[in-house]
Image (cartoon, rainbow, N blue to C red; front, side, top):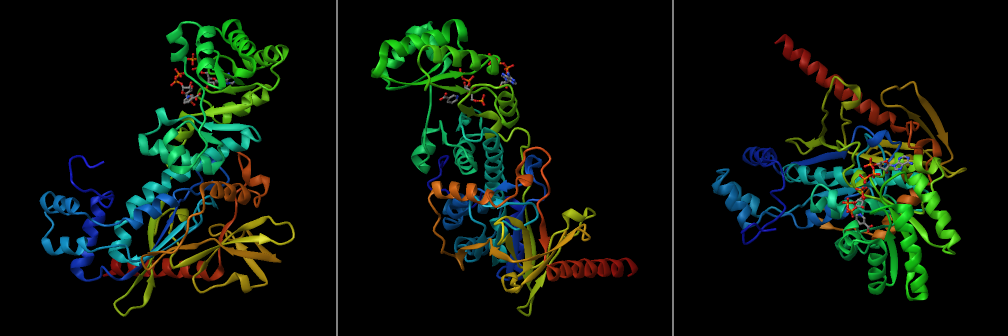
Length: 489
Ligand SMILES: Nc1ncnc2c1ncn2[C@@H]1O[C@H](COP(=O)(O)OP(=O)(O)OP(=O)(O)O)[C@@H](O)[C@H]1O
Ligand SMILES: O=P(O)(O)OC[C@H]1O[C@H](OP(=O)(O)OP(=O)(O)O)[C@H](O)[C@@H]1O
Ligand SMILES: O=C(O)c1cccnc1
């Protein structure tokens, strides 16, 4: 999308204040100081017990291609009035830092760094907006998809939301995220082409309206396709749609693969049960019933509770727009920065709300897995120089309500971060999408069911090591002393 420019990049896909800060750092000569930022979210989306991380593929593409092109620089020169020497600095900028990230498809929780950026201060600052933009949306959709997958269980779930998504990129990357979260395929053909996802589809009401008759429309479709799923609710599902589908299936016999029917309105519990009887009586016991129409995990659960005979669920609007929670709220916080002597100094952002106080320092995140039952005991955030793998007994305690604690022995501590870029060089090979999806499903098996139920799940422990916690308390104290001192002077 060049909008008339000869060249274009995603590098201006940032907030102006990031470039303004970069200019201040550059002018002051601190732009190359090593800085560490954590990307994390604070509250579990949809009040779910876990989230599924998606977005890494796009983050990699964005970082790999990070550079200001000439039309970006011309814009900054003419419209924002930046001086030539600063523009020269931007012209030569490439991302030269290190990015550590959890793997795509990882089961993630609030308040743990999903991505950690360690880079020259100005570079780390400039990429914030795009990273958050990507991860916030894709993680939200993967998580919503996973919630729907939990209730759909062993049946088929198809993503149908392109027409309702917040624009084209959202449809495309959203459906990829939904696939990672557990969907089986998409109606978006470009997603099939670009990501290798399975594509699937039936037909719309428009086709039945065009032929003005269920039977004629289905017959015409059968003449032009081998796989047939007929949409039966345009006029009257049980009186016209289902009988017409059965009639065409009988007439065409082996000439078509009659896969079933789709319901898109009305009482889908009642209609699916009646349609199932009609299909079975006609001998089409293998024909499947597809359902769509404003579905989400709640309607699907209710339909199942009513004994609906639905085999395949098409979900659009409520998935692709994350209808009940439109934002994940992930943030990007500076946790450590090099001082004038070359030493790293940890930084903190204070808030009146204890849960919002950032956790200082360059950190690692471990998943503590019980060797006896292969279930996760929780996640354990340490400072960089700690190694829980070498410890035989771990004290895990809640970082806010510290009296909630437990000791864990006989565990494996799995470091959840992979190095993606090392000093600017891409060193990570992204697995195939199918593998990422498999990884998400596999990792969910590490969680007790109590964390996975869609309603009122238990809170999964995300704890700080004692050293990490002490460091945080020390930083809080330092800030407090400084503020007290300012008040007095
Ligand atoms: N038995 C059922 N129990 C609970 N929810 C249902 C049941 N049957 C359908 N639904 C859901 O109820 C909602 C009905 O939507 P709506 O009122 O728009 O009617 P509709 O039958 O889809 O009609 P139309 O698409 O023609 O406007 C949809 O979200 C659908 O998934
Ligand atoms: O309801 P969603 O979860 O968003 O799923 C996608 C919807 O898109 C189509 O409807 P639409 O009314 O757009 O077209 P149609 O005429 O083919 O029904 C389809 O029939 C689904 O109802
Ligand atoms: O293939 C379908 O049935 C379909 C595709 C997109 C939206 N609604 C339905």
